[in-house]
Length: 429
Image (cartoon, rainbow, N blue to C red; front, side, top):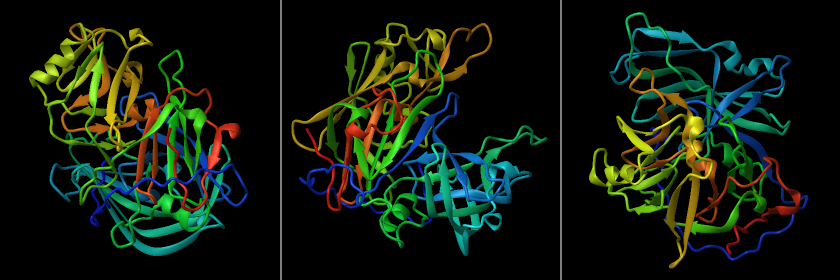
């Protein structure tokens, strides 16, 4: 999700792509791979299940894998979430203790190393503020039994959610169980941290600052989508067509990876969105936000081009039918300009990938499927990631896209795996 920390990030100008060739796997060029998911649900993001520490009562926790923020944190035991006020820094009248099953206690883990270090992370225009006073280095274990030792996390003891609540404070609002920020690490003065990816690079668990995210082809029914995150290597079986370099146009104070807005094609018609903006690639956001101004003529033309398939529901794009009735062959296509003149890349995202189970109740809304697709600004969130392969190399300033959602497995295909040596980066066709 879009993160705005107290220490803001200045992103460097993109430089020329290295021409170094990738090399086959070898023992001195390690990589890290683990599964990710886009759960079936209206507010889902890209997540993974992680077991923190090595105590006897360890348990997996579902955390957000977030390219829109830079910091890694999890709840400590007895953490408190506050809400009920629309005012900045006002905890409000409501609170709850985070359940023990969603927390991590480093004192119970023989492999933990704790230090007293404060943290404060601010998300989504100060609508969520989390705070803590402890860092811990410990072993992280993923659902594939991949373990990463000595990984640093911030432990958060409290949060303020800036939302109005009813008098009874019931039900409690949804809140994150933990966030692993994946956006670029610049330096310790400009990125508060802890930085999950930089931790791996600094400890030589990976030799390069590369990351690939991918998803498998969607199943025939609407359900959770499965994929993988690969650090320090590339698996060419996870995409089809060329991997095309595009510019990261992030400006001073912007955290993450930003692109120029793409042209959008749906139902055979192409549109140039009317909002003058850049677009954040943010796996921690539940929806894609298209750069159409709400109620603008361009947005209305986009809806009209659907031939009645799409309609607006208060800024949310909806399918005029049940979610299951959306055709498997119906895509929204995004064409991004390449970094090199004359190059571009088209990403097809199945419209069904936007259908995550939300629908309108009552006679007027019967048979209407709300999509994780909205307008205003520009963010490409979890739905976009389900159809694209997003590749980054922070060491070389490289950002690239390819058509994803094509493979049948989430683990690496060793025959298609290429691991980078130091100073190497992606090859382009």
